[in-house]
Length: 312
Image (cartoon, rainbow, N blue to C red; front, side, top):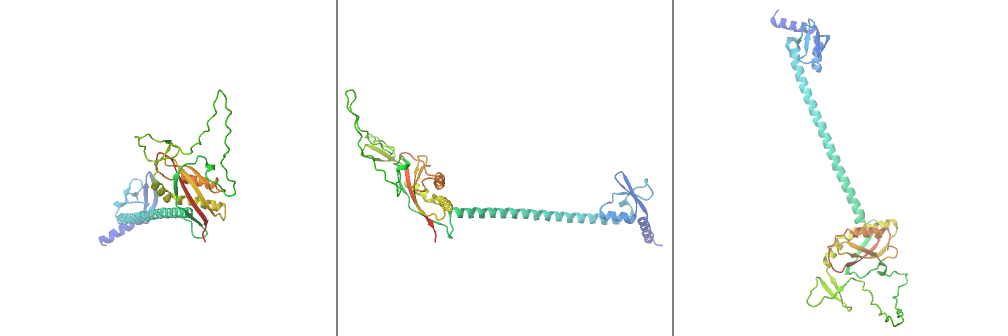
């Protein structure tokens, strides 16, 4: 019998032999050599596992036994390949999760952007289908001269207030007190005395017949620029009013006064049904956001007129 046949017979005998194997402090078995090989390929045992065919005192490592050395190497290669496959699958899974998350974020951002655009279009850019047609007349800027809102407009159907021209009855003269002189009418717009010769006031000064001067320092072109760029921000107030009142259509003149700090201070709406209410409040809130420049002197009043109606 040749040496190769002897070795093969020896290895086969080892595979057929009953073996004990050790895991930690436990001694398990017995198992045949073929069962040990199966556990090697399953990853339960490794080449470092101690085995014995002669009892608890003769343990040796699997990789040191000729019958198991080749199987130990093949099992190690198999475990490495399987580990690499698992790692590759794990990376691909993470990549898919990341790609899905990015796609979800992008789609969410696009959806939010589309919602914002549609909301803006619905509020500030009404569509052609039954939406409001809003036309704006050019603004008129004047010096503020009204002190009471109710004196600003006269409404159709309301009796005009005639000025009280009844002369006041003079007080009866007495020895102790001379007759009172009639008081001059109160000047509504704020004014300052005409400057003395030699002193030049700031801004443009207009003098009236009562000897009072009106200082005008606001920039009309700057006010017109702000009004032109911001007037569309009022459109949603008219749209909301149309939603509350189906068939709403009207000419809505309004005036607002710009305070010296550059913010709208007062608003008047020249329409008998819209002097106060939700639309008035909406217009005032939007107007207070308009960024006019601060200035000194007499305050400016801006007149705007909106023609609101249904398209088509």
